[in-house]
Length: 95
Image (tube, rainbow, N blue to C red; front, side):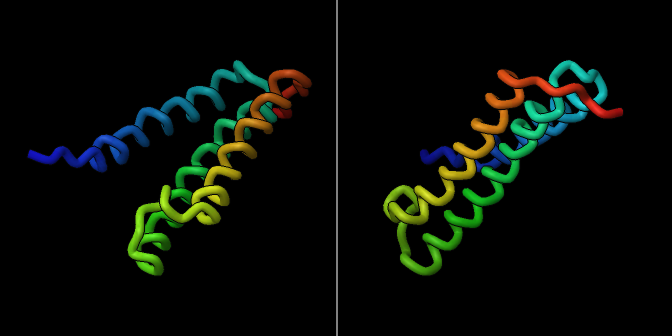
C-alpha cells in the first residue's frame, strides 16, 4: 500500500501560517528575520512550480532535473540568508 504524503504537506501550511501570524503580532523578532521566515513560503511556491514543470516538460521528478532543482533551492538559500542577516544584524521593527 502506497502512502501519499501530499495531504500532510498541504496541511502543514496551516500551522506555518499561524506561526507567521503570531510572529508578526508578537514582534519577537526583527523585521528582517521575519521576512526570512516569510520568504520560506516563496521557496515552497517556487518548488511546487518547478516540480510541476519537471513533470510536464521532462516527464521526470524535480530531483532529476538539476538546473530546475538548483533554481528552486536557490530560494531556500535566499530565505535562510535573509533570516540569518536579520538575526545577526537586528533592526528595530517599524510599527
